[in-house]
Image 1 (cartoon, helix red, strand yellow):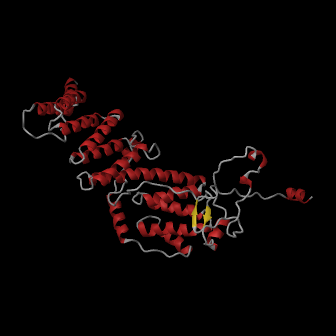
Image 2 (image 1 turned 120 degrees about the horizontal axis):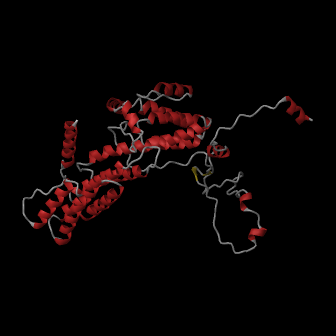
Image 3 (image 1 turned 90 degrees about the vertical axis):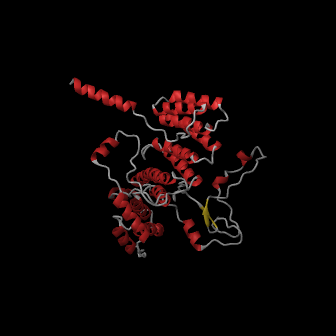
Length: 407
């Protein structure tokens, strides 16, 4: 028993004394006092004495303000905060890395600083159904790295991190869309799923999202048959190995729509993803309950991640006016200064009156310029927008109620 305890104590001591090498040392062999201070600080960083290391580095920066190691010292201060870890230390590290990029944008370590900023937010990401602030920040920082330093050695790693980040963001959007779909809010579900499939085509469940999108459009009426067919066509063309391909083809035939051919590039990419996708085991699912970080094993390993922000459109249930051939927000609202103090008492509410017809429009709609409204636009404007919820079934009147109504 004593021997076992002694062995465990030795292992703990050895692991605690193990040094983690610093990534950016100064290889120049010199006994200059500023170099001696730098080496001492790096030794403290490697042994976990971060506060002592920062005091030494600040002494170097304030005493030898013309030192050739000044940039390396500033970077080491940021690295000490990054290694210390925790939300407070990472916030300090991000500020130091941003300052380093500002003062030394041409140094090779500038790209590494931006990569560390991306990693700071990547490590703090929450699961898809929780707060997405850190995931959005990580996405922005990784994009900035790819834009500012596209030829850096850190670019491939940042690109893969961006795929994993967008997998988490897309999963959150998918959960939101499915929540609306389950509750019967099909316009809201279609709005979320449409934006998701357009913004994140590399999402591991993009084919399932398109399938639910087509179902949402089909439940909104015959007017959205073209959108239903568009979602089904994308499944057949862009996700040819999806389990919904056969059903999508059958529905396209039933809708009397052409069935597209599978894209060879999409086929090869999807085959590669399915062959290289990591599956989480039983123990991983169990331990995942206690982790705050999301599971990114299903994220894509190839393909170009989205480089633009996700901007969901306005749901189709929101009324809009048709002006000419463009469907947009209503433009019949004006602002003016009221000079008559009795206007509120003497004049009727303007909202109770329909807008006046212009240029001979009989239905009160506005026509801009000399163009006339097309018949298709007029017909669609007269139809009510799709409702958020399915209308409840009407109850049949009993014979007693019919007799009472007739009397």
